[in-house]
Amino acid sequence: MATITWKGVGDDGPEETEGFKGMKFKKGEAVECENPEILKRAYGNQYFEVSGWEPEAKEDQPTYDVTKEVTVKPPSQQSAQHPVVKHGDVKTLEATLPNPPDPLPPAPEGESQTNKTGYKPIPLK
Image: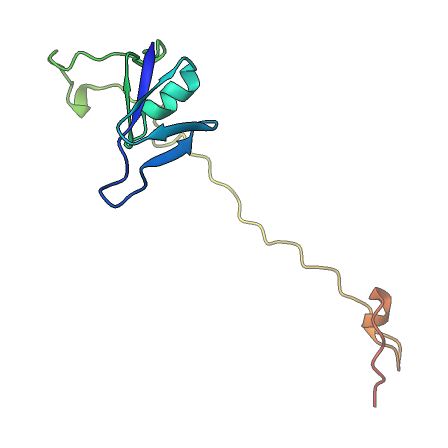
């Protein structure tokens, strides 16, 4: 069965701690555990040591052979990733000016524009 040992947090740290769903650990004493989730969390924690258990290798991660030599073509011999636009294929766009906003009619004498939005009108002098 797999065991988890708490290494402690230094010479001045506490002698026991609680973690991983309420499990209690004393410094340097191994605690048995069968829960793979807890074992995985403890395995990645620097303050714990896990023995009798190894994390499962992920199958979706590719493995690379770093000893294999790789041959790379120079850029002049590589094909373009995207089609390159050639001279004469470029379309020119006509520049247009944006439409100006419609002008607002002037407010009637003695009335403010703000009364349409619910604000108290300011009397004009």
